[in-house]
Image (cartoon, rainbow, N blue to C red; front, side):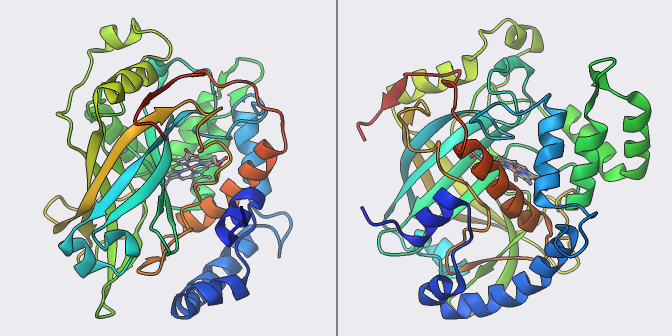
Length: 374
Ligand code: HEM
């Protein structure tokens, strides 16, 4: 099968070249060009390409590997424990009114993706994990694809790549104690009140009992481009249709190591699981910073429904050798001036390149599948 530019990008981690992007959508390239030129220069600057002692994508991944006690060969440098999913998405008329992206056209759009836990340890016990994620590749027939990687957290703990990096460094265990240095963490928190606020939100929230009952947020801001050219700053949520449920900590701690994945396999064996994609529209003055949540009264638009009817272990599923780069965006969706997705795109491709060059041990959740035949 010929390899299209995004598969090439996915396999190599290299961004599609300008000629290919121009072929895909000249207008978008101009827009992205302007945004990327600004941000690429910023990230190239921060990326150490212009000033080598500055933070770069490789530095980032080196620091993440050190914080994790070394890389787990062949696994993602974050969100390492996962399982593949598949299904489809159907857009709504309101969705079409807000974005020209082909996924909202109304027909069934093929979806593949991955549920995971945010930690870098691919064998961590599920009960020790507080952040769960959903990654999706939406592939409308005959139109460019959309990739997203979203978390079940109320915002992010930081708003800049630099602060994310500083958090990784402050969280790195001291070899002498095997624990992060409290003084370093204190100094970090004193400098980053946005992380203190995030931790308070995390403490206040109830943890969903499983992937199926959980809802996932884009956290970062993106631009939706409407048929009349109107550009709206948005964030979105994949809102679970399953009734919300949570487990008392004692019950959760007594659960088997892979209970989240076992429960999902059992659930999908009974039938499809569904989410509604809900876009939240920013109002003038709303901060486009990932650590700052927008007021709850912002307008919400139902963009469509996601139906997941197949789950499969990574070894046989089709989510292992994919980079869910949040900047693989179709016409109708564009990056905003939120700096985080630009750092993510560069860092994910380094993590992708390293892990696909390594021999991978079998995943914790192996040789299992449930749901519709592929
Ligand atoms: C500067 C900020 C961030 C950094 C440095 C970072 C780093 C990483 C890395 C290294 C990976 C593994 C990529 C791979 O090997 O394919 C990853 C995966 C992921 N990240 Fe981030 N991340 C950041 C922010 C975020 C944010 C804001 C979100 C959510 C809104 C997020 C959601 C995810 C998800 C869902 C995955 C797993 C994707 C999959 O299943 O393949 N990350 N991240």
